[in-house]
Image (cartoon, rainbow, N blue to C red; front, side, top):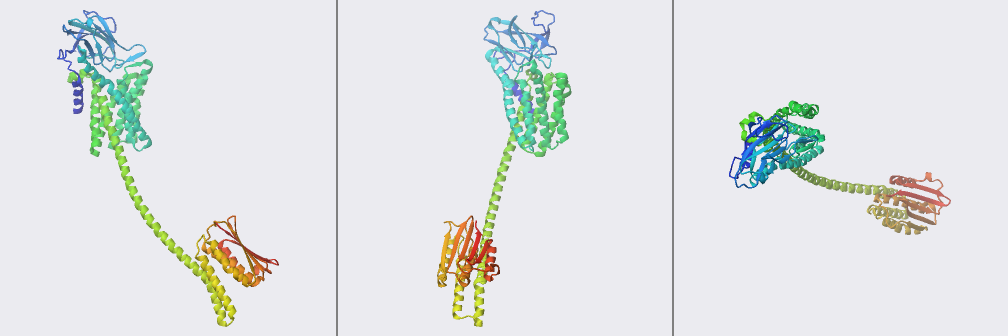
Amino acid sequence: MGWCLIGGWWLWGAQPALAAADGDGVQTLRAAQVLLSTDDTRPAPDDARWQPDALPAYWSAPAAWFRVEFEVPDRLPSHALYLPFLYGGGSIWLNGHHIAEVNRSAPGLRVRWERPHLLLLPPQLLRAGRNELMIHASAAHYPPKTILPRLGIGPVQALQTAFEWRSFVTRAMPVIAIALCLAGGSVALFVWWRRRSEVVYGYFGLAALSWAFRSTTFTIDTWRDDLWDLWRLLYYLGTGGLVIGLCLLALHQAGWLRPGLRRALLVYWVVGPLAYLVGTDRLADLVWVTGLLPLGAVALVAAIAGAFRRRNLSSTAIAVTLLMTFLAGAHDMLLARDSPLLLQSFPEWSAHRFFLLHHAANLMLAVMGATLAERFVRSLHALERANATLEARVQVREHEIAQSYHRIAALEAARAAADERQRIMQELHDGLGSQLFAGLAQAERGDLSGEQMAGLLRDSIAEMRLAIDALTSGQDDFRAVFGNFRYRWEPRLRDFGVQGRWIFDLPEQLPPIEPHAALQLLRIAQESLTNVIKHARARTVEVRLALRDRQLQLTVQDDGRGLAEPARGGHGLRNMQARAQRLGAQLQIGGGPGGTRVALQLPVT
């Protein structure tokens, strides 16, 4: 209440002192004579219907004539008439002459002037001494009441400040508020639309946009008849939207809002516009506008409860500004209805007819907007802190994963080395080991001659070199490994009278071949050449190595006596088939009068 009074006295104090004959030569006309009439013909000064009245004058009549007198000094500067408001418009007469017309409601036109008027009085019509001013004032469209304020007459410069200040308060500030409410409400509704859980932004956006529509009543003075009903609907929607939006927001902040209550408030919101459509303004005021004040009280109680519950600056500021808005709304309702309680308790203040709800609501919406903006900023800060914490945790997890990866890589390398050692040991055991054990057994029985012993040792050495060359090579060294195999086998073939032909049809870049696979392939080639030496009685043998369609092809073709029944071959042929099967390769062995052909196809990638 204190803030409302301070704001009111501040607005009032900004007016120039319109006391009679003050230091600036301004006169405040506080008394008049009134004649109720809708006739535009100026009545005679001695008409018996004139009756005295004080200004501001309030008459429940469609129109009235007002007659006032004022004094002008002998040496007068340019004088003007200051009308703080003239809601329904009217005609103005000076000393019997018509000097100005403020548009009044007429067929096809509705008016309600909220802004002030400053009219220059024609110097040639002013008389030194007593002057007479008549105003035929009309009632505004709603409410149908003729009101004439206290009039200010004096030098133009002295009245200009009062005129500009009231113009700023009643016209410029609403325009600024409309722009800010449209912008802020749209942003708030956009936030709510993208994040439906943030209902406070939705309630604030509803209140702000509603108040923007409601504020048009202070910025538009004249309406065409065909647009009047639309404007009144917007007026009621805006008024109800502000109260309902604030009520929803306050109830939500207090934790009192329930789905049923929210639906009831939204239904009540549309009752006012429907009442206007059914019975115009009178019915809407009777059944709806009066009920907005109790809803405002509910919102105020909820806001105060929310402030006690949260105990922070923003909740307290909202409660305080909502209290100011509630008191301002009550003040404006009393002022609009010309309540004797207000007019008699605060006559000087009431005479200026400053409506405070507009300014209190602007302040309240500004505080709420700042609170929501602060909440949004806090959310961003919380998100940044969460991101920083998350990044730190991710870095820790990345470090742990990297360490785990290194440990796994080390374990894999150790396991691979162990597997490789196991394969080497297995190959040596299966190849060289079994050959040496068999030779040792024969030597112990005395079944081997010196030449046979030398041959056994040569085969063992060849087997050992073959395993070492293959297993110690890399995946890209197969060409060199096969070259070493050829280097060892060419002299041996010549020693047995076999001419070897070696054909390589390989690209520069071979696909990688695992050492274990290379060893198996070389052993198949070795077994094939061994069979040529021991059994084929061949004069020539052709060894071809080629790459066709991602297939590594090894062919050993001799011109010996061939194999009569390959399927019934000895251990060597079965070993070759087993090795090819382990490789996933296809092995074909063909024998006959034309010689023996061993063909291996190994898929490579």
